[in-house]
Image (cartoon, rainbow, N blue to C red; front, side, top):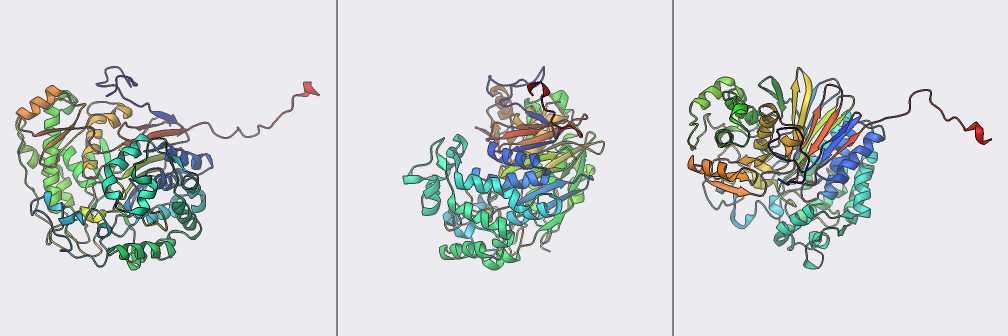
Length: 564
């Protein structure tokens, strides 16, 4: 961590790089300052948290185009002012023409099996699944918002038409994806002008996207799901050899899901249910570690990190076997989340040695991303994770409408007969973890992040940081992370070299990475009504708080009579 930062409290284990924001009327935390500003603009205009969240999501499709877009999918966890929770599931689905054997895996071993011949499931037209982002955002706005779709889309339209300055983070993402993007003229024209990746500060103008957004603002989500924009998308993908059709777009259906609730040391954890793996497996891992005094073991120590790694491996073994779309696979939710099952798994854990873990439940039988956290002064919370999956999704652009499709087919198992195998209409299984935590039935913390498979493990570690180590919110979102699903143990550089050596001695195969998962966005709710927002160094995260308010009733202008 940088030595030039803000030490949040005495005794902090490290110095944070960013400072939190505070507000009383609302808080918007996203992974780009212009998207946070778009949400704050809606709060200032009299909108609520849902208006702000939807405005921010549309803005992110323009300023964070490598992470999220209309031809993507995700989940929005909404807590209304009356305390009710709902998860709007807009996760992408397999197109109707999808087949279990449509890709050829390069290996039969997991997770290497996810890689297919020619990377056809990850790059290009066959990697595109049916999207639900636009429908989910518009549905949330319709049911819970105050402002019109046209109002909340104005910041995004403005940013697309007038442009914005590319950040170093965006430019680094462009450089990483450039070899694939260079094969497509439309996406290259914007992000690789003249064959060279954009440089920080360069103006990014997306005229075609601005026109598409303006059409949607007037016509609604039907413009993509059954209308002219959808027709253009389907025709372009078909021309390239893909299978996403106008019918897939027209027939996509959202699902309302009741969130799952777990408990950890007096904190209620509220997270999405399957096909998201977060609610089940974050609760499972917390249950396992509840049997240890994590606070006494210390943050970032070899003992604590070893227990985290083993809990992650247990969760991923069970996830591979049994967590998938519940419309296709029977998921043993109650058993996985039970304290009794945690006792069974905990008893098998060796506190001094890394182990290989297999699933403790039977396999079910067939029956990169952005995140934002927004709250308003009336008690509404939106914790939403939406994505086009990998950096720049399928890595091509439908040029006529300026939209980048997702590559969600990469997350399905290309081997037939497994829980995550490809079947028409099947929703993907995701690690998205838009979390709202309660104390005494009242909101305490809301947070989440992008990062693919590494998402729910990072949220799990944030809860440990807050509950067991007593960290501030800013510390918790920036704290060094680790991750494994059974192979190498990935650790950030913030994990001390001596700790890495001790973990190696325990049998862990250590890989040091610049970062594990993406930028976390969080809000903490204080008893006096103050909203505290925090974003971390792993992305362009920015918290914008709204305070103050309108004039006191009865106040009016009084002229200065001394001036005649």
